[in-house]
Length: 237
Ligand SMILES: C[S@@+](CC[C@H](N)C(=O)[O-])C[C@H]1O[C@@H](n2cnc3c(N)ncnc32)[C@H](O)[C@@H]1O
Image (cartoon, rainbow, N blue to C red; front, side, top):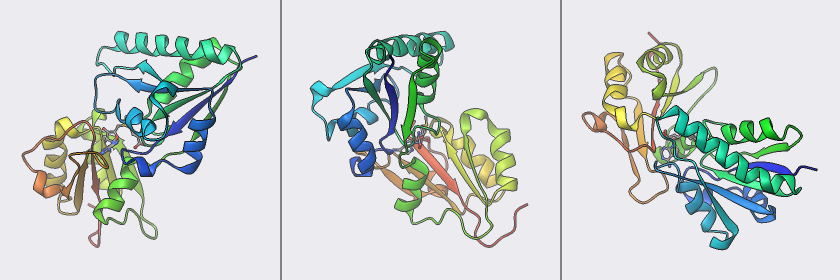
């Protein structure tokens, strides 16, 4: 008999952005896991969960998102092994993750690795509010209207996908670009799309910044940085 693995999106940072369904999934789970490690991402899910659950209810999984591929895989394997012990006992295990569990989330890797060892495990997700939605709200940005299209991409994919997206999509959201913000904004400026950009860092967390992207020229941001470029009025190039 294997249990259930539930990926719970807890929102980007503000504990009030955890949904009622997400909270229920966390409260009803036999075991609650949070990722811990050495990036700005980890720690945030735990902080949100700890607003609602006692410390003793929360199990920490080492999930350092190191650049070293082998170290990362080792982390995922160890984390999967730890969760699988409880799943084998038929327990329901919840894993809290920032934003949404189906958008660039460590949950995807965890679930995949767990399933390799326990193919019969039930995997579910509870959607969470994404950083993109939170930034749109905090900056008063309409993400899409009418026939407009949206591209969401990580800057870790490089400059070319960003250029392409800015040429083709009315709205472009760039994640994982904090440490290379100069390059992100440089590309947008070059193609004439800086003006309608908004930048948000550490949304819902101490030290939050929400600014027009043009005001960030020359600065870098933290790991938890998001940029939205919209196109109001002018046609695409
Ligand atoms: C691994 S992805 C996680 C995305 C998340 N699952 C979601 O649905 O939004 C991490 C990226 O999400 C964005 N992000 C997540 N939380 C954020 C926050 N509180 N403030 C700004 N950006 C955030 C940043 O672009 C960061 O580099």
